[in-house]
Length: 178
Length: 239
Image (cartoon, rainbow over all chains, first blue to last red; front, top):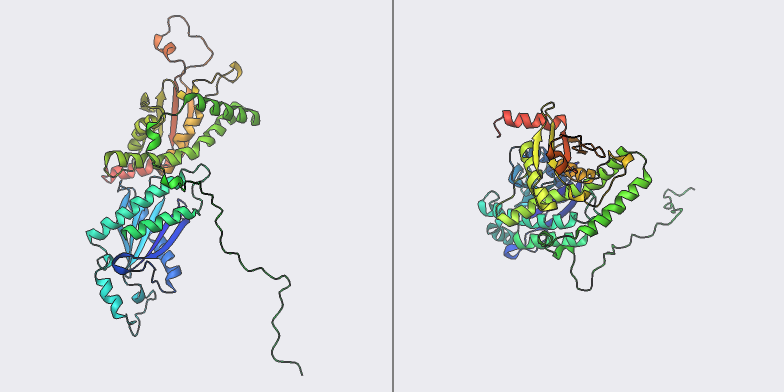
């Protein structure tokens, strides 16, 4: 169960990225994405920006829930007041996700301990209410830290966020809720 | 016999190995950073007006020394207030959310946005609501917010030759930043005096005019795209 969290500015420019894995049920908090996922994740997340832009004018809340799905990846979105998008990509089974159009000839084998552990994890039901609730709480906490970060008078909007404290806070929120 | 394998090319300038990232972030000795401060704390503590007036005064003097004409000073004050507006939008939405325990609503329609500016923004900045909100009859994309006595103009006196300058252009910049951040493209927000400055009202004039000599009108001009989108939402039954 792996996550890729990205904050995207008003000009579709990424301001912050963070990859992590789940820490619940004995997970070690390390993401298990494959090699190609490094750049594919960014593609998938940015392609769901179109969906966000459609939704943002009809839905006046901040949390837009699960907006898109691509080959086993689910994307949740939170929109701040200033049109900055927090996108969370979650993949319950990253080792078996192939990004090419052709199905794999032999499915990659999974270690049995991973399989049994994953059954209890949050992400096995990515569209359940429990997942939405956990993601919502995570997003709210990141939102609070985000406001504190942008209130810095030297921070110009749409600049990348490089503060190590912000990264540590996001990671802590991830460990707590996801 | 020439050797078939070539020796590797030597770098003309050896590149030093990349240094590991060393954070130059300084921590106060109590290990508390900005992330530990409560966002709602400054909501209740009042800011001192003289301190703000002093700072604002210096700001105006600085811009005045660097530019010549009245409109240029107003533009500079507008640009100075702009980033504040962007950050205020998120802060006010967050405080609304914390106070009422209901998730905050982003303003998606023009009217919602104007109500937000008229009440929430003015209350947060000046502890009162703005005095009036009007739509212009001549142009569809112009709206006016009226403030009888802008707090920022309290200690500012304008000389006669610059009587057109209204230093509430700073607040106009804050409003423009907030509307832009909410996604409504603006042509501009400007601050105008409601009455002509430096001209004595003639006999028999309405008493109302003299009661608020500093009455300021903020003219908000929305861009074409925002108005069209608003109409489309209304037509689509968005409400």
